[in-house]
Image 1 (cartoon, helix red, strand yellow):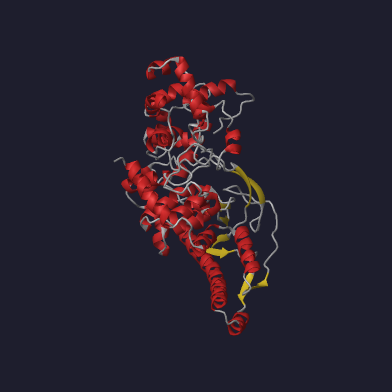
Image 2 (tube, rainbow, N blue to C red):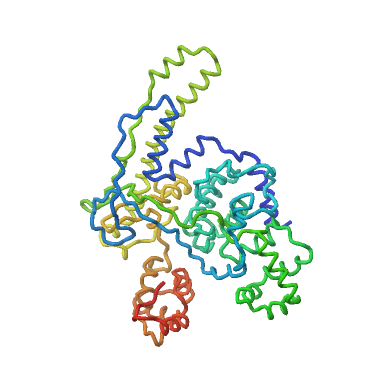
Length: 514
């Protein structure tokens, strides 16, 4: 039995056990994920629905002020909020693979399919009943990462595996791909590579299918071969399996070298045409998260402020905009005295318990956020004092161990939460930095140096990856050529020969762009 089939069978039991998580479990996760704006809305919604909650103080009004983010010099250190458009970055080095389906109108499939992912003809996975609509369980405004988080949380996998899965869910790119190597992920959360590899296979089987694939070719192999979710006509089976099992053939398809592809597959031009029409018929989504918006408007307001005082970081949780809510205990006691019906008493008691839980959970959320931030900046003091170039290696496991909480909790709290620092506003997960060699060089520092070197290169003879590695070595940064290639590619900087060609067509002497 294949590993993919075993995982699917496990998922059958996992999702059938409790697909609809309890309200309180969902609220617990949502509370960790929400920023200040979202948490305010959540609290006010609870107040409107629960008679035992009362707003004592409505908190500060939402201010919309400009703010500088991600390391740019902040012009107003005490800036409180902003209204900015944040495009979701798509770092997909195989984006040109979509030319496979270039002529297909995906919008048409989106409008006519039974769900948001163009899966009209996909078999239902995980033995979910045909009439079950997953979107009834997951609110439409949730991100795909939240959707995955909720599914992972109700699963029966061990907590250690859930930690890995949730970390992965919040590190997917906008298309649902996870390009990070299993080795890098293992280092970040202090586990073994085998566990990460297993987690990646598990993640692919949650909805939407294929999340966690490294790239488009791997996604196609998973959808068409490994998962078995696509009904492939018998006449195409052999060609499909050969095509998606061979990188060389996929490359021929991307380059539209149809003559060579026909020869490799042993089929005629007519048969290839029919095969391409099959791919374009809506049998699968073009990428895992197809159907989710790729750009959205976000309010970015610092959830906390941090600065140095007498050589130590000082953390201030900015909760001024959150309403202060109190329990209406007397109303509860009066209701319990006056109501005689047992079911009504139970309803009242549950409402009151939920009101207590909301107040306690907001307090716990802010306390844990403080603990996470305190741990992060105790490791990153040099950044607070001197800036971006002085970030030190730091993993989620380091912070998890510091505060005694699950890695999943740290993942959720650092996702979408921002800190106002002396050097600008940064998302908290920005401070988790990889070590790339034995000299404590970080991935962010290496990326900065690669960009600096390329920006200063000759336009006639751009530096190769070997050249860059040699220059870095002279500056005391020992890394292999393949490491340079990895981070250059991650930043979407072309190869030397491609940069040379780009320079020849540049107008106005602009420097190379990432």
